[in-house]
Length: 224
Image 1 (cartoon, rainbow, N blue to C red):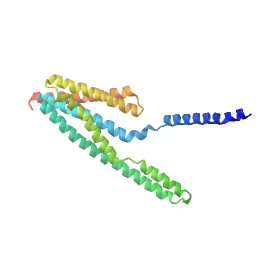
Image 2: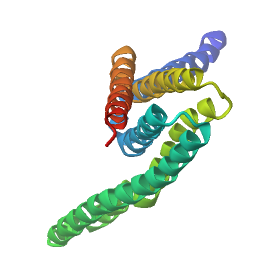
Image 3: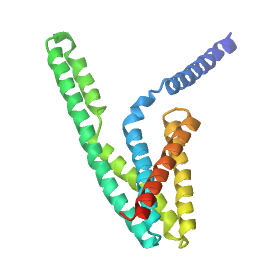
Image 4: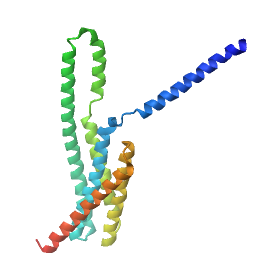
């Protein structure tokens, strides 16, 4: 009988461990990936904008001027201007969202003060809601940093190649790989279809570069 009794604690521990494992797996499956939307959207959009806009600008300048210095300077100017624009735009946008959600929390709190039974619970919920509000500075910094990281790719690809055609090919190749990488990364982190997301980003970026190059070449050859 003593031997049977000693087995019960072991069995209980096994059941508790299995329950803990199942609970962790359920929490992982039920994770709300929309919580990542704020910074993920800012980072992915910033990186894609940096890649496409800077590469398109460099391709446009390269269509009418084969000098490597002109391409690098135009790309660097696009990096600085784009990073500042992204940061300011994201800050204003997210701050507006912050003000709207904060005003809604205050309205909900005023309505909740009429109910004396749930004052303590409402106070804890208010703190949790305020912590979950979007952070304008975080979104602005993520946009500027991501834009700069994306814009560096075509700059580095063109910096060390003197031959004109090889330089254009290097820019297109490097930007294409980076676009697919950023599209795949954003899809994986957001649990979206990776192949479709990468292809969509790649096609859009190549179209932007081709249109910019073609129109600039056309206008430059017309003598305007």
